[in-house]
Amino acid sequence: MPKETVLNKVENYLQYQKERGDKFVLKPSTAPPKKVKVDNINIIPKPAIIQNIPSKLGDWQNATTLAELKLAIYECKECPLGNQRNKFVFGEGNPNADIMIIGEAPGRDEDLQGMPFVGRAGQLLTKILESIGFNREDVFIGNICKCRPPENRQPETGEVDKCEPYLKKQIELINPTFILSLGLTSINTLLKTKNKMADIRGQVLDYQGKKLLVTYHPAALLRNPNWKRFVWEDMKNLKTLYEEHLKTK
Ligand code: URA
Image (cartoon, rainbow, N blue to C red):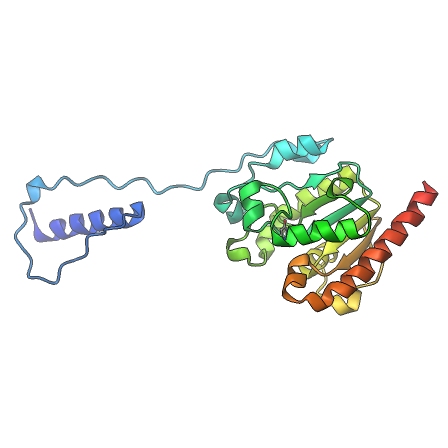
């Protein structure tokens, strides 16, 4: 057998080990090459490269309930995040909520449990809601992106573009009076702006006919507890607006 073919076969085998993730990978020896009886080498065929599993989407545009929508999109793999996630995080809460809360994207805990805001930031969000007399079940909690970006990085434009239509459909079905954006990724995605928090906090904005407010993301509060007082102000403001809204019902 020609020498080149032997080398190719060894290279192929090393590549195969690497792709399989073997811990003990044969390394090319620095010792002078031994003669190898090629005919006895049992070359294992390379496995086919694992293809991304195609997206399985139902007719989500025509969903008439959140349950139908979830069923239609939970196997979404329209962007790379879909192939890396453990669980699709649809969002949860009251399907007829007056208040919808929108974060950025699931983190590690959310990805493992399939529920939004269940990690440290989520526990803080629960406390923030309770501070103005709400339970998580009173509101609907969702995210701009439904799958976890690696290392909790910000979702990329392409990922947001694929996921945002699902959020819009959720908003259409829930039809909340108020939307509370948590953090700049959330508000700037909805408004297609590049605002800074100081410029927009405290305002009542419009998002497709809903009253849109913004406050700091709870993860930011964990990093900078000084901002808690701003969140407290924003939450009191939301509560006041909500109570006024109840009087008009
Ligand atoms: N941060 C978010 O923005 N969303 C979650 O669900 C969890 C953490």
